[in-house]
Each structure stands twice: as structure tokens, then as C-alpha cells.
Length: 260
Image 1 (cartoon, rainbow, N blue to C red):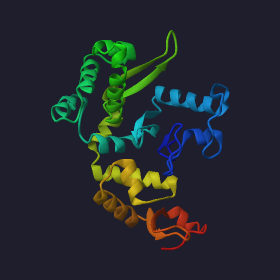
Image 2 (cartoon, rainbow, N blue to C red):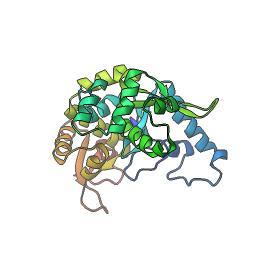
Image 3 (tube, rainbow, N blue to C red):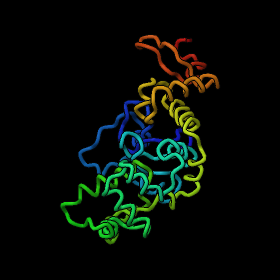
Image 4 (cartoon, one colour):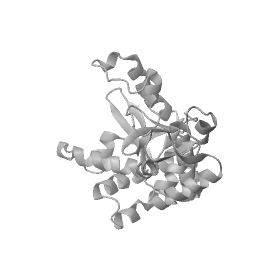
């Protein structure tokens, strides 16, 4: 996990993001079986997805394009710096007043700030969203707060009934959040792009913008900085259209990659 920095759980990105299910299955883009409950690879992937975050070995949440991902704790501060900057949990009210947080999300944060952690049903009761007609509203608000790195799922309980337990991210990973608040956005972008390209080997600027929410100027500055450090090169690849960003390990290995 520390080698790749972050990976999806089951979703197979077309952008070179590592996938835990592919790693467990030992092949690219495995097909979802008809009887998934009896599939060994799916079972182990599901167990790792539950056990690693519960033991606080990794962060688990919807970080890349709304897809669930596992993130190594050494690189998680970079995600925090890009998404939240120097904000603390208490700043959610300011985000709401600025129109960047929905009312439902604010009500959930009110409830969690008052008491945390909470299981899903208790949390819904705390913010007066127990009615079945409010389920989608609640789920959308929870997704909003997860993607904004306000809250984190810390447990999947199966007995006596299935439920999730939720906490404020700041309370659950205080050291990682503190490290993220100290990082500049520029340093965070370099950290994430370097680790991503190391695993993906090659990419393009548009992919970096889409994956990490970076502007064109931020991508250009990051590319320049990493090129100066000898991490990646921009080059043409035989048989592929346009120019590509390639990790220097692939260039030096001379496995058919053209020199710039």
C-alpha cells in the first residue's frame, strides 16, 4: 500500500490508478462473478477494505472521482491539503454560510460535532432524518461530507445488525490532518502526482487535472518541478498520439520507450 500510495477498492480506473481487487485477483480488469459471495478474491478484497481502515493502517473514503479508495497515511496529508487546505472541523459553518455546504450536510456536521462517533441510525436520528423518504437526501449529504474530508467511516458493524460508524476526520486521524494543514497546495500536488506517476508509469496533463482537481497552471508547475527533480519526462511514445508524461524509471529501463 505504501508503495503505490493510494488505490481504488473494486473500481478499475482507466487512468492507471492501482486497484486492490485487481491485485488480489492477480489479473487486470477481472469480471464480476455471478455468485460474488463465493469468490475468494472478492471476499479477501472486501475483508481488506474493512480491516485496514478499522485498524487505522490506511484512510478509506471516496476521494478520486467519487470512487472509494484506500490511501496510505504517509500520503493522505497531501489529499487533505488539496481538498481542505488549513481548515479545521469547526470551519464547516463557514463553508455552509459561503454556500459551499448543503443544509443537510451542515445538520449532519452539527450532530457529529455535538457527539462523535455515531452509528448511522443514531446519526440520522440526531439530525432528524430518520424518515425513509429522507434516505437519499441523507446519503447525498454523507457523500458530500466524505468527499470534502469532513467525516470518515471508521467501522462496518455486522452484528446485531449491519451499520456504519462515523466520526469527524479530525478526531479519527488527528496527526494526518495536522500534517495536511501544514502542507502547501503546491507541495501536496507534487507529492500526489509523483506517487501516482510512479505507479501508473505514464499519464497526461488532462488526467492529472481530472483525478486531483488541479488547474491547468497547477499541473504545468507540478510537471516542471518534477521534471527538474528527474522524476518524469514529457516525451513522445512510438505508436501513441501526442506527448506523454512518463516516469523516469520507464525511460531508463529502455523497454521500448522513446527518448525525449
